[in-house]
Image (tube, rainbow, N blue to C red; front, side, top):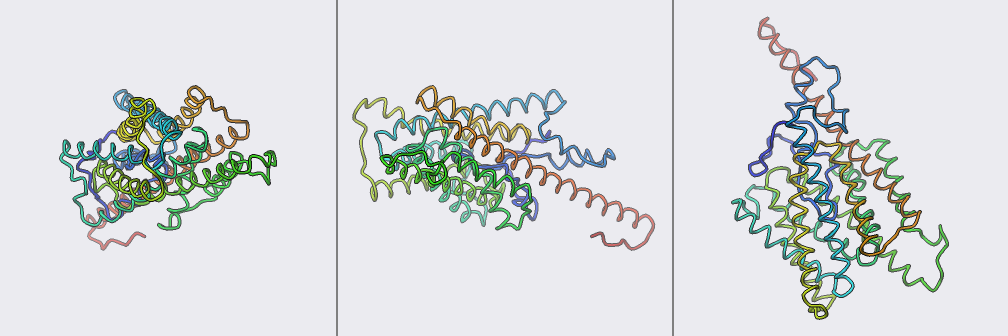
Length: 405
């Protein structure tokens, strides 16, 4: 963790750079299109192996560094992650406030257009090509932007029909979908533990949605409202799946482009999609009542989301993997607090239990996948060191080296 990565000049340095990214990196609420340096660096793992330790210290998932300088950076990273969670939560709060008066596509357009302008300005300041300057990435950047934009639209819709807490928790299922997608598309390992966590996440969804044929507590008079709620839950789950698909696209791109390029693509494509959706399916409504307040709310939706993206990107660079994954829970906690304080939304016991299952299992999935990736890196280093020792011994003795499988 001591070696900093220059994200501006980061490139793909291995034959399979994108296959090393743990699924603990997710795009919650379209919060990050980035690849952070979670997990121990290669030098760190090599150092632990060179001290004749039989097992490297990758199992110390939740620990912080004992080095004072590194410890400060890690704490700083965790603080940035917490602040980013607050930024995204308040952005979602303003989406709910605007959703009572304005069409969903109009809110998405406001958020994405602000993100587009800020991302383009940042690319100019950082001297970054917003469209990407590496061959073979434009298609995946487009896919990333398209599925990310679709997930954003679905999440915004679910925010207007569900409580802030429920919508946030449902979108939190991204890591579970990511684990399945990575196993299917990249032939990655899908363990019994992954399956167990996924099943418990499904149970959490049932506790939150509380379908009538299982709970049987709702009156026939509320059938239309139940249908709206069910459709909103489906939209939230589909949005979470889109976030997992966006992760797959990010994984294919790897570190070949600056993170602001990802932000630009999502803002650009979401702006186009929201405009098409607005004029095709809805009607543009110019804020009239409390004009200044409504415009401020729309501006804050985009501004807070962009600030949250930048904070999260920097926080993920500095925070260690385990505590960084746990800090993702702060977004759910802040959604619970903000929803109760500003919207007077108080979830029932079933919803709280379902949220606890989803958050707990997705967090466990993230940590588990990070351990697997780190263990693979450690094993690869051990094999490389073994080959180097055999070559060194063979060259000194003048014999032909044997192949190590």
